[in-house]
Image (tube, one colour):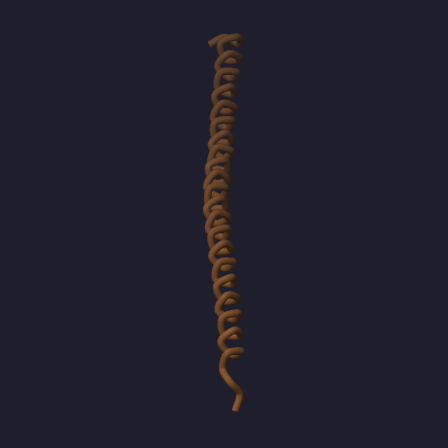
Length: 81
């Protein structure tokens, strides 16, 4: 083999190594993106659940408030001894 062929072979080999490293790095980036999407989806689900729980808590507090008003009203109707 002459010098030109050896040089071309070396450049080709170096190009393949760089392409392989680039592919590995892109694979890592893709995995990070997938993980981020999963975290974002889970975060959205938890946020919706929290909103539903807050709404249910507000409804329960309002119900308790109504019951307390009814008890106060009924206590006002009961004659004292």
